Length: 66
Image (cartoon, rainbow, N blue to C red; front, side, top):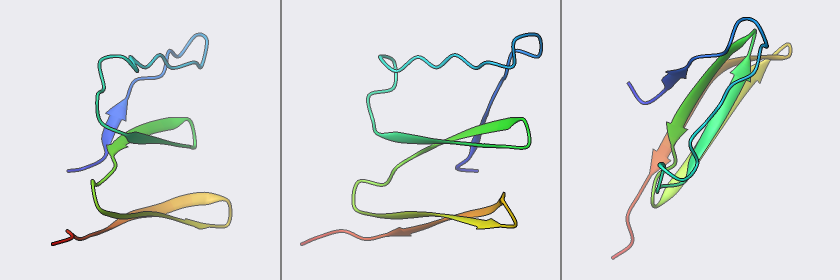
């Protein structure tokens, strides 16, 4: 599974992320009080699909140059 759940503090409704510990580029998607993180591909696209103001899916289209 590429989407990794990130815990949100239920009292403050905030999340803390270690940006120094994550060396690779990543994206965070937040919807309905849930947060998930995904690595971005080295070559390719990451598409976040929404419907009626909610995230429905995340799609990856990867490739490699030669």
